[in-house]
Length: 639
Image (tube, rainbow, N blue to C red):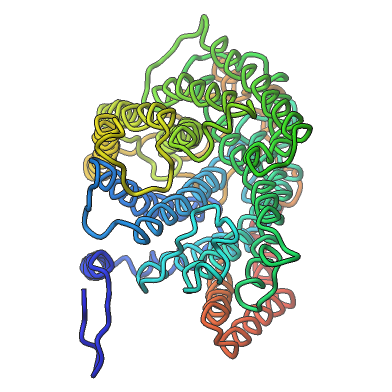
């Protein structure tokens, strides 16, 4: 679309124009709603909050928002691939490259990660008896850095500069030689900013779980979701700095003419090593928290203690460890040699062992239990066969010789989605339904929840099961069309119909949230008849929980107290806890880092220096001031 611009003309693709128009209209409606409902004080309190539940809620809200955006990208991809030689709207050639790049990047970094971190924020402190995360201020900084990175990434699309080198950012395609526009600079800086927030969260989560558990809650009595959060946090601490190093080197290649990933001394294989040393553990960073969610849900709705608790913890740790030993199975075809390929093939296959242990333990937990088929339980049940299918195709891909055939085909796309959606997304849905009372005080409508589950699961299998076959027939990934003679039409059309069934299930979620908040009634502390400590506090959880603090003497202490008809023993003699305070500094830090990033992207170095000085100054101010002095003086929140 050509738009007059002063005496010149400017070309803007019609999808970008449509996005601008839609965003402005929705923004106006939102502003009117906030003004008429007098929600400005509420917004102001959330802008300054450092409370774990509120920050977790914001992670969830923005994760869902970006899920809708990335989901629309997926539907556009499927429309373009629905039939041979299709020319749907503008999504061919480079526009298609932008489409699958933004879809993949957003789903991994700005949907799955924030939704899981949001659930960790909401549930982990409540499950271990902590009053907040160990560093509430740092937790707020982490959230605003995530949001700043996400906004930066989305800005690129609205400015018609979306990245186009795939979510893996493979060099040399991502270097300025082949993609000179600023799109991949947005990719570099948005992931750097949000990744820094993720590292801060990992540090915070580790300290919280190690230092702020309730009295008597030994690690061997801790629920499995905090265990998975702890191991995931260690994975983040190791994996994300490697991604940061790779992104810094790519930044130098793009902005300052170095040659780490190209030229006579550099190599694109270096990028692949750095990216996959991060990228493969990232799969488990996404899957392990979901395993923890499923474990707690299956135990609660089977009315049984989790089967083989020590084996479950050990397998979580083993999966995390082996996750770092297998990165090169993504690189069998780059020519690492038979010895390297054999080593990484064997270590990849080994991951099936602890994963299989977990599957059997979930099944044995249900065996002989009193099973209630609620919506969270349905998502947990749907996860098991789905993830097993993803695991089986993963073992197929670990065979180096076979991988040469499957590599970069739709078979890999199908495997990847079976693994990530089968574990992470189903786990997120299960967790959101399960802990929704702790977020809002209400339980989502069960009938609509089950409709959501069945539509999503049926649509999911219709979408990705045919991709295994198209992949085996040789259909490459990252191509925007195919021919009539390729025998791929029926399978691709089935995938497209399935994608729209999946998408329609999200409309039911929207209706469910509206109906629940319009007509739903507030529930008590324990609407699911739960087993762990989060069900002892009010729904939604208050800012000052666990006063007095429960004393834990066994696993699932709340459940056994209920069964034996006694109250949980409590104490006021506890370690001083973190004090959540309100502060505007976290959001200012994120704004400063955004300005610094924009300055670097467009080589406006004066702006980059100002943004950098602003960030440094705000951290210095934070280090010499303490918003908690008022609480210390009053004794509020300190025991």
